[in-house]
Image 1: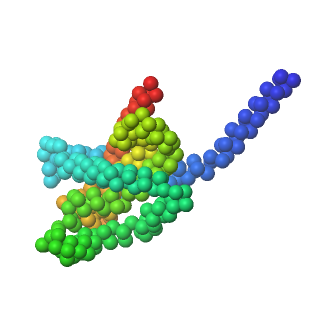
Image 2: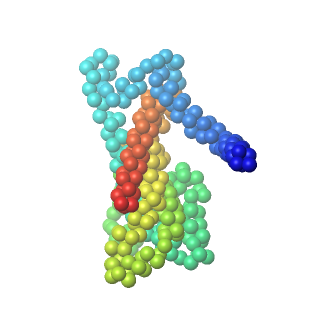
Image 3: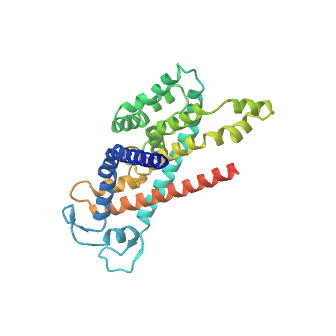
Length: 310
């Protein structure tokens, strides 16, 4: 009987594994087609040779990566020097994305907390109000932002009408405009994960901290934030990663002086004058950088969680 029970349990386990495999198959196929295949294509293109009229020649070459990191002069016959132009663009992309993430966190955290502490009937209404602007295409929203911030736009007209300023503020084509555009584009990605974390938070812990004479700041720092840290971490990642590769906000709000890596990549694939291998190489460098940042952040988060558990 014991052998029969063991045999039956093994058969059930095999059936479960087979069913799980078939259920996961559509997800794996979708990931392979929409995620893995494009990445492999970009990786292959980055090692090919540029075709004069656009496209690629199927000949192996490291010229794209060499162009990104080294300057060999106009005719390629000078000793190699570090190419700071593209490195500067990458650095600008990092700090612009970081600034947008910080701004989203500063605004998104109290917003998410406010929504999560409303009544159950009102929470869906507030979430709806947060997400409804994002039913409109990102391009239209970015153009609208440019119209709002321009020198003769509604914002400057309003500030001048109430006497707060005497002349229009020059906001468009500045770093601040880019950060504002990124913030506006990805704010819900910060609010929603934090809202989900706060909604699951046990507020009895805050009440217990208050009973022990903890200040509101201490309760926030020592009780609430550690409990909702995964939501905050997820929100920061969801804002930082797409901000790094964004090109609409830099193109429309930043101008040529605020070029970001997403704009650089876009330029390489647009028209016949582009350089597809170089654009693919820049994409792979961006992907590698993002993966390194994610791995480092996940490692730091794991260390913090382990220290907190101990």
